[in-house]
Structure formats: C-alpha cells, structure tokens
Image 1 (cartoon, rainbow, N blue to C red):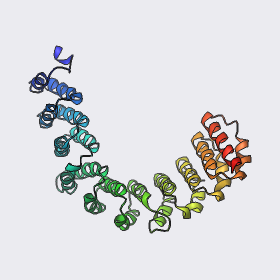
Image 2 (tube, rainbow, N blue to C red):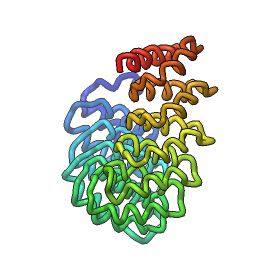
Image 3 (tube, rainbow, N blue to C red):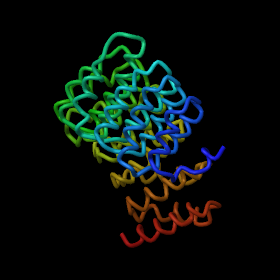
Image 4 (cartoon, rainbow, N blue to C red):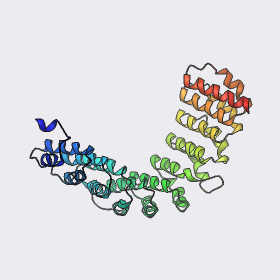
Length: 323
C-alpha cells in the first residue's frame, strides 16, 4: 500500500493514481494535490471535479481551496450544481475564498440562475463568492436578489451590498429591514454599517435595537458603534439593559465608542454583571468615555475575580483620572 505513504512524488505518479480504478485511491490522489506547487495540479483537480465518484469530486473541490487562479474559480463555480450535496458544499466553501476578479462575470450569471432543485443553492454560493470581491458590477444582481423567495439568497445578497457600501443600495436595504426572516434583518443591520449620522439609514439601525430577535438587536448595536451614530445614544442606553447579554455587551461597547458621558451610570451598573464578558465591555467603555465621574464605580470593582476585567478596570481608572 505504498501509494498512500508519500505525496511528494512527481505529478506523473499522482496523475496515475488519479486514474486508478479504485475510487479510494483517486480520492487520496486529489487530497494530495492540495499542497502541490506544480501548475499541472490544478488540471488534475479540475478533472477530479468531473469524476464519476462523489467522494473524488468532493476531495477535488476541497483541494482547490489551496489553489488560486481563474481556472480553479470557474471549475468550482460549475461544481456548485453537482448532484451530491457534499460536493456542492465543498465547492461553495472553496469558492468563497477565491476572490478572483476575473470570475465575477461567471459568478454573476450563476447568481441569477433559476429552475431546478439546486438553483437557490447555486445563487447563494455565487453571491457569497462575490461578496469579498467588492465588484460594483455585482450590485444589480444583489439588489434583485433581495426579493428572492429563498432566505439564504437574500441574506447573501445583503452581504454583497454591505461590502460594497454603496449609497445607491440604501433604499433597498431599508426595505429589507422589514424582512420576515430574522437572519435577513440581521444581515441588513450588518450591511448598514456604512451609514453615518444624519443620514436616511440611521432610523433603521435604531429600530433594529428593539427588534424581536436578539441577534438582530446585537448586530444593530455593533453597527451603530462602528458607524458612530451619535443620535443613537439614548436607544443604546436602553439596550444596555437588554435581557440578552450579547446585546447588552454590544450596546455597552457602542456607548464607549460614542464616548457617551450620559451613559456612565448604566455602563457603571454593567460592571456588576454576572458575566465577565459584559463586565469587560463595561470597563473598556468607561475607559473610552474617560469621565472622572466613573472612578468610584471602577474602584469598587478594582479586585474583580476576572484578570482581564481587573486589567481593563485599572486602565479605565487611569484614563478617567487623566481626564
């Protein structure tokens, strides 16, 4: 069984294994090509994507994750409609990391495919691959996909728009903020991270803080903090008492980014939260706000049981005293 022992031999030997009658040997050959630097490795892997055995096709799709270039990206794009789910998933995961600009036109075509049981999966995977490319030519197809009947397609389309940060997409994003699916509304909150104070997207972000699903509220708080939406201070103060600790932590973090002195009482209260993650965010936020009025609350937790919290408390005290 020496054929399994060493993948460092020349490409001709690997190619011979890739043609073996045993699908197990062909599969191992595909996996061995992941680390190959020989230009011919991609050709063998592309051939493996068309193998009659699904395990071989899956192995080829996974190994192509390690290879760049347009042929690899296009081959994976075709593998999105493989009859076997495991192959489709492997191709989608590998394709998402490609960031191959020349493959954008083909991916845009695939993002518009209709018909057949796999069409929604293909559209989803194509949009996911387009997201990181930040190619403006993908915006029309992403906007159109916001009305797709499949939730996953709508969510990935929002990812494309969020990465493009295009003002022209704002009306469609605001409309999508009322989508019935929480995962889509959460993606809207993430996509709105490019809005700025005083613009039309602010009310949607603030409304997201009171969404019925905690993950939407959490994402809204994060985007508000990152975008530094000053008019959201009061809603964030309310969110700092959210029942979900994840929302509370993000709201406190955002208040720190906004340097909201009005939030010192509610953030100081979070220093006593039972979860150390919330206490860390509270100490860090008070340090960012740097209001001397926060010193007594910080001194009261000087000996917090969590070492990370103690470190942040000391840093925050120094910041507040220096202010």
